[in-house]
Image (cartoon, rainbow, N blue to C red):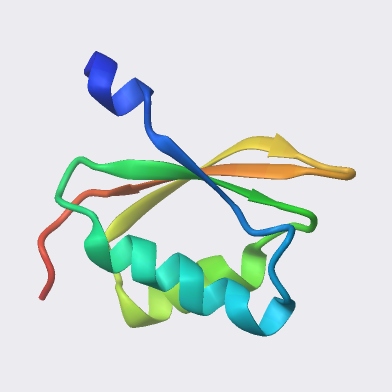
Amino acid sequence: MTNEAAADREIDVRTLVPAQRHQTIFAVIDSLAPGDGFELINDHDPKPLRYQLEAEYPGYCSWTYLQQGPEVWRVQIRRITAAA
């Protein structure tokens, strides 16, 4: 991992209304180049997002929990492949 990759941006969706969260996150994912990533910060386990990501973009991103509650979840999401 490069120093640049280690300094990924944070996307904190806790202040967004739930209806805007997935749309915002997928816009960021769509803008990533292979190898780029971000840290997602959420107020609940984003498992439904992970299922949606795996269904719509299979093999496209890695998903690594950095913190798992109880009040804050942090997930490192990194693009690993080019779009199909």
